[in-house]
Length: 165
Image (cartoon, rainbow, N blue to C red; front, side, top):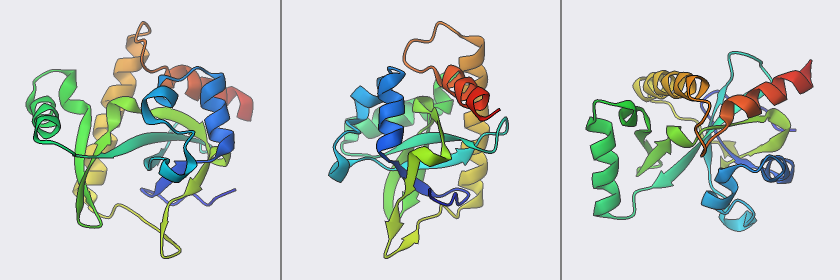
């Protein structure tokens, strides 16, 4: 089992992949997490409901001007879309935290993403606070909108909490 470092970057292990497949999570299809060598990175935050439950937020790299324009449009919007993303620099590369694609796992479902044997940690305090605030808004939105079909993070979280009791 890995050690959770606050604001660290992680990837899913086989247990996590199987959990998401078993629970029919859309994220499995969107991120191709079964390809180990190209498995995506996730920004991890602890749940305030249970210390063994984590929220994983996928990271992506901006690959085109149209993608950047779409993300910027969301960030500038007045609605819920402004909470979908947060831009961060990781090792000098502009990345995007996809807060709207958050899902819940337990600590035994992840492994560290390291650079030269050291886990990478997001250090920009302003970005950390912004991600935390946006995540709270998205979780509240998902909790109040049970018909949301792409993400059932609340059900996953509750399932994991009940398993830990």
